[in-house]
Image (cartoon, rainbow, N blue to C red; front, side, top):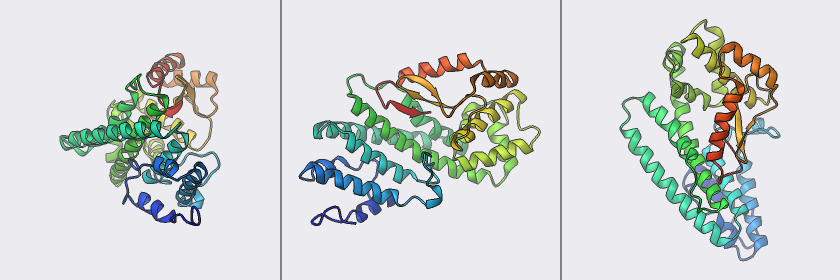
Length: 305
């Protein structure tokens, strides 16, 4: 595939980004658009890169309207596609360069801090929890009000890229634990430790289904109330991934500063189901989520926890 008759082929660049030979997070995608000589050529180049990368998705993982998880797409692919979209949405070259430089600086300093914390972690489990929380905590920090909307979105995008790498590392750790299912369930759910349960909440859909099967086969794997709560959150998480209605209304995303449920939800049924297992009332949970969404205003209009 050639971008134009006189341009270099796009496949080598796509291969370098997907292999990690070039860092797909910090790569300057704006240069593809703004240094092409003319607007049409720049857009053609971005589109060609997007197509070349998208073709690497296995056919069985392509479902209309479905979000690919780490196992299906990979952090490198999502980084490239996210970078291309930002280059397309950039108002102009100066805006892109400023956002890119600031976003890359944030990403690199954050990665250095994460590495420092991981080196001090007393156990593999503690390291996994640090990885799980680090990038998500950064996302919840208010963006600098002096940033433009585009620059704030760029920052959030690079944080998601770091999060993907952490979730992938944690996925490998959890798969290792799955070799001894009883140890996995005891370690993650043996006590009321939400930070441990979050490791599974943020794992791939296939791993979550495996854990639900273990939950359903076990009469007990922890405190009764905590057990029901953990199973409810994970059940909704898997149903959303499978594009089915939620049961407990636990999953959603921020849309323009307000909490919006993922997939259709029967709120009256959800109120009853939540009451039966001891979850906080729906209105209380919604207020908590709305406050968190307000803190994220100024970044992307739509994002997920």
